[in-house]
Image (cartoon, rainbow, N blue to C red; front, side, top):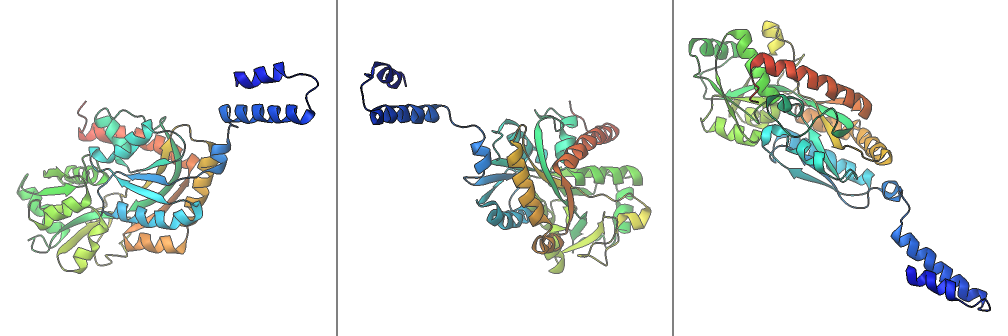
Length: 338
């Protein structure tokens, strides 16, 4: 740029106007390259694939639903959406990734309920009330407990009765430590004066494999086991929703059996703190349109989930409230390790 400025200063006054204009144009082009117009990147978003981190192994209900959601959303967004599976660490690896990612809208994550719980259990390196841009709450799981068909426990009542008479003999698997299923099972244990052992895995598929292989007594998690129940390999003992699941109309809810408050595990989509408002608005508009489509609602029903929509502002308020409530749950159940 210095050489261009010098050439203008040294140019003779009698040079043709065209010559001066060409030099000036070169200077402007050079300065534009060095000092690009701000905001254009956000205005043009997205210009390359968007990545969504799913903090579970591939093959589980969350992963499957988000992959189908991404396929529907990609067409409206104008770019492909790449799903990255990062299971482990109590389903917080997505949250931890966006904590340090560039806030440009190209790295997003699914935030399940453990994201608000785990920081009270151990240091996770993020604060869910300050470190994320909440885009949209999306869905909630239908949760419950299933056992292998060969299990001697034919009903939830038999399962609880056995646990009461045989302390620590019942083992149950979940997708992670501190998951909604883990917390719910411990609350059930307290409510029914039983003790059982929790065996955490990195994802639902691993839990299901362990249950079918006889390594653990029961599966506690989402109703992603429906195909196995239909195939006669597993039996759903109870679900935890306010009403009976459309997938399991013959299976009672825990609430109707003993009055236990209903439980589900809502999750949504968020990005790093400081994302451009234009980018957030575009993502929200596309995601909301897909979430409310008949095609996606059918997918949710198929995988035992329901639409739980919140806009970014309401989602952020929910996160703050949830974070405070989880502190009380962790303290009450004695889950903290820090």
